Length: 369
Image 1 (tube, rainbow, N blue to C red):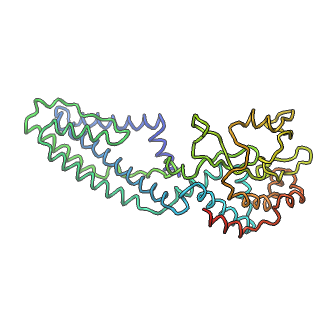
Image 2 (cartoon, rainbow, N blue to C red):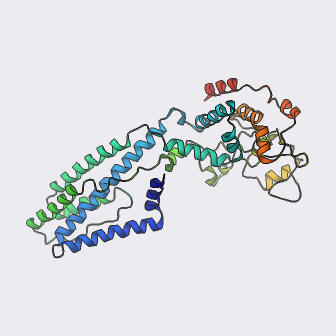
Image 3 (tube, rainbow, N blue to C red):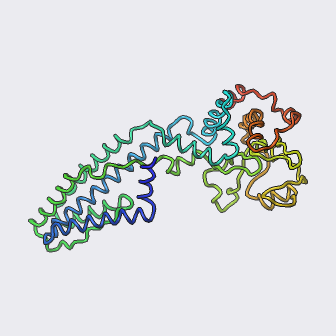
């Protein structure tokens, strides 16, 4: 994990980029000093080195794409519903076996926990062969580039090819700008030889670094969907990944609301977890939140302070029974964790939680997703 983080810092933070460019420029200066008085030789070696950088980056990109596509081809990665079923089924099996700790942590920190699980799972996927993809791409690009350099019959053609090749990846800052109108055939051969020598001798110079994590790719994270959780019940939004950044009505969060007690919402007087779902709350009910001293009417609260959420039943309701089953199994553990009281038995009975069967719920979910 440290090596991945160090690599990300090197590639993306201002100090990392500055340090990388510093080493790059120092190497260029060192090459020019090494061949002082022989401009074509020094520039040929510099060109060869930068060609290797591009070849390496193209091969790294291919390997990273291989990792990403392998993840996207996992059977449960087809949509947000199947991804969440995978996660919730994992938690449910643990709860069923008496191990409730991870599920309790999830319901108290939904966004953090599901994102951690998702990133850890996709980044740990071992299907695909990015290393072989890297080798195949590097070999193909190396051979093509070497052949192109050999085929160029003038300095201007080499210059055109090199400068075009530099633009095919990000973060390679080099442009060949020597004047070639006075370069004779012998000079061209010296220049070409220096390029080919650098390519051959430095072939594996840039191969030691990790591939990009699949979770760093937007198209992978989109499979998870929006991970914002309702303030009043903790249900995950069913919107698309980052949809809240939209500037139209589609930026509003919407979800299958669940028992409020799953995220610790409780009666202020009795300190009992609430078994009802927030979309069933009466508009005139008084609620407390954000440490406010005085209560606010529910209708006012959702209009004034929670207007970025919808509070009505959702058309995606397939997880409703599973969330109620979790509340049935976890309400005492949640209450203990939060120093509160479980909901009254009559509330669990009234809302139908006592008759829920895990096996029936999971088999129904599997047929619908």
